[in-house]
Image (cartoon, rainbow, N blue to C red):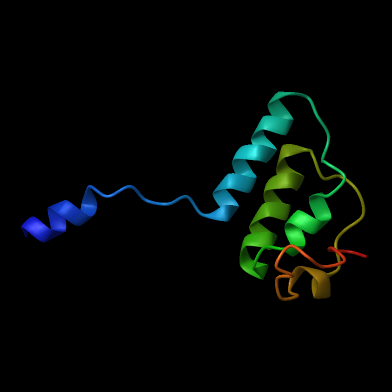
Length: 87
């Protein structure tokens, strides 16, 4: 029981997806548009996080262009060093 209390007091690391959502929220609040490398940022995410990020961007009004192909959405992550989503 004491061990459970100690473990529950440890800080939880934020997921990369949470970091992206925080940055995207900052863009919305600052009245900015998507950065030029947003496709590369999305491509570096796992497919499930990428899908959630695209939904977030669409609902926030930041992403209002053409749909991203399903094959691109489900592609494996590039590790940040790929050609990018949709290219």
